[in-house]
Amino acid sequence: MTDIRHHITAAVETFRFASDPQKAEWARTTLFWLFWLSIATFPLGQAFREAGPILSLAALFAYHYWGYRQSTLSRFPLKWLFAAFYGLICVKTALSLDPRQSLAYVWPNTWKGFALPFIAMECARNARDLRRLIWAFAIVSCYEGLDGIYQHVTGHDLIKGTAIMAGRLTGSLSTYRVGNYMALVLVPAMGLWWVLRRAFPVMTVWKHAAIMASLLAPGLYLLIFAQARSGYLGFGAAMFVLWVLLARPRWYWLVSPAILLGLTLHFGPHRISVEQAMRDGRIELWDMAWQVIQARPLTGWGMGMFGPAFKALGLHPVINSTNIQHPHSMYIQFVVDTGFVGLGIALLFLYGMLIWAGRRHWRNLTARPGDARTEMWTLGAFFLAGWVCYLVEALSAHDFLRTWWMAVSMGHLGVMIGATVNAPEAPAHSVHPARPVATSTPGDQH
Image (cartoon, rainbow, N blue to C red; front, top):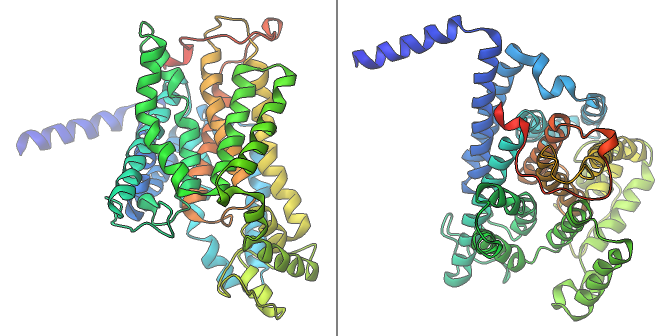
């Protein structure tokens, strides 16, 4: 016991007399591993999803206190987009049809969603950070996928004991919308190919492929058999973006995804057919949402007010529950909640971030072959594609403040920002169409 006290006292004294930059570095290291653990434990239960962001936020405050000037946030040029978008949420919570209900809807996401971009952007300072984060997503994809396979075999998942729901797998999230979660997880996990190539350069391509397949196949299995169509669309869109960014196909190959989509809709399972989509309950919700929007087209009804709004107008859903609180489309929801003015601000935030990061990734991924500085841009592209996955899923999945969905996507946004701010820019004179295969990055030494 005396030795333990001695070590604690020595550690406290060391910390006390350390310089502010050293304290900031310790805080950032703590922040990184707390964020990493929150990713890796996310499907295990609500306690993990609550504790991770709270502890990470405490570490973020400490890091900014001692080292804000060296932080990613201090160098991020689009901070004003956060101010505009989060300001919109605050205003439409206060000026709502029912401010108390709007606050109850928004408040739990303060630390579990809105804070996550600021946490995540500080966890993507160099390529080593990105490789470690990709491993976190690969690990969670693997064990959550195995849980889904176990559920398919036994009828119940192993972690929570949830039964198969309407013939669709749920994994440990207790809903078949786990398919949307798996799409978001699998996109950055696909970066494992580049991570393995760097870690084991002498290994053959087939061994790399075998390792990657064994780790990611369970997650793909759960994605497929959860049968979440929004997840399919988001994952497909993300893979298309990665294909364009990293493979740079000739323009005439870009029609192939459209042909593949057409064949899938025609010959694929009935659930993803056009006929089934036209009978979906979302059609009723979107029709009701349009009537709600017409009543307040410019300013909207306030955050989370779709349910109270259609009831106030005397509308009654037939296919859907009368207790439903969102129109099953994030973009339509923004018009309902904040009006067309708010939708413009939301789109500026959501797609402004994407365009800003996408342009820089496109430019830097054309650097001269063999330029090691492209590794961070390559790995960052997987998180950019993860953000694309979210934006496409948002067409028909969930409401904006569905906590678990928002948490994962806002984490992707933060890592994308961090990678874009911190990755070394390629010299302008070195840019040309050839894409390099990088093996290291100067950022690893930090």
